[in-house]
Length: 215
Image 1: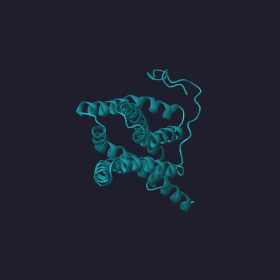
Image 2 (image 1 turned 60 degrees about the horizontal axis):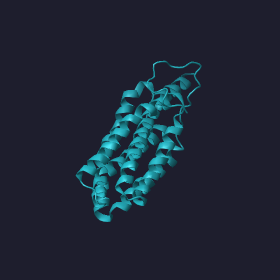
Image 3 (image 1 turned 120 degrees about the horizontal axis):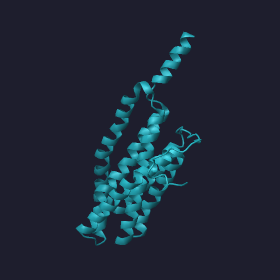
Image 4 (image 1 turned 135 degrees about the horizontal axis):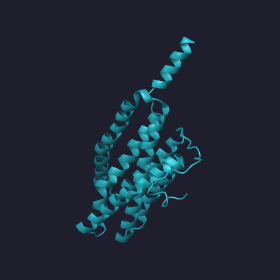
C-alpha cells in the first residue's frame, strides 16, 4: 500500500511527462515559425513592389485577425474539441505559407496574411489550453513557467533564424521551412493525449460569441 501511494504521489507531481515535452516543443516550433515571418515578411512585400504603407497594412491585418480569432477559438476549445482546433489551424498555416510563393501579388498577400494571423493565433490558444489539461496541480505554476519559457526562446530563435535564412537563400526557404516544421509538429502532436470534452447537458449563458461559432 505504501508503495502504491508513493507511486501515485510521483504520478501526481510528475512534470516532465511525454505530453508536457510534446506540447512544449510544439509551442516552441510554432512560435518560432511565426516570429520568422514577422521579421522577414516585410522584406518579401517590398521585394514584390510594396511600399511602407503596404507593409503596415499587412502587419495590421495579421494582428487584427489574430486578435479577433482568439475568443472564437477559446469557445470551441471549451465546448467542442481540443484536437480539431489544433490540427485544422496548423494545417491551414502549413498550406498558407507556400501560397505566399504561389500567389505573389500584393492583394493576395494581404488576404493570406489575414488568414495566417487568424489560424496562427488559434493554434497558440489551442497549445496553451492543452498544456493546462496535462499539468499536475501541485506543480501548475512551475509547469506554466517552463512552458512560458518556450515563448521567450521563440522570440530569440525565430527572428534570428528567419533573417539568416533570408540573407543566405531568400524567401522560398523561409516559407517552406515554416511549412515543413508545422507539418513535423502536427506529426509530433499525434502522440499527445488530448482531453475529451464531455457533452454538456445545459448551455452556458452569457457567451458573447456563442452565436458566431456554431459547429
